[in-house]
Length: 160
Image (cartoon, rainbow, N blue to C red; front, side, top):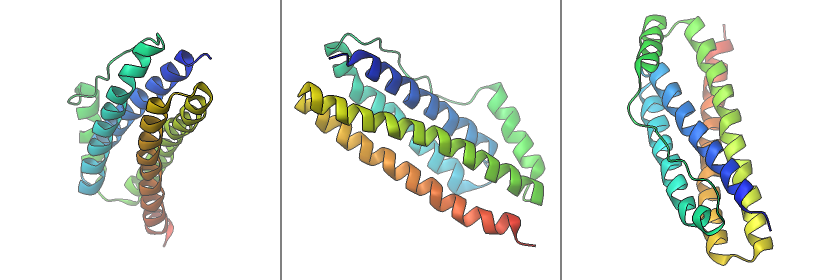
């Protein structure tokens, strides 16, 4: 069974999501809940990547470590731009667009966990299956949080 490509794609999805979460949090730093939650979820992505390491080694998958540390110059500029927008109607539309974009990244990672669960079952690797199920549950919660945030934001942005 070819498990390595699944692990590599999953690592890529989690790494990209962590970076997306940090950029999102910096851009919308005025919204304290978004800032802190996005940084917490980025750390969760790092934990997921660490959980994959033993299986990546077992199945000879390439391992790259997440680099989701402090924001760089570009993120600081986005944060400043977000501060300049403030809480205007335009800022609300930007927020909603960014929430939609983030949702796609969250869903991509969550679907990769679904795939890993299935591959783990087919490979009869109980240890990897337990890790995949645990991380998949956390990945599902990310999507639920974000859907709730979108549901809260949409009426505020589009009500006149």
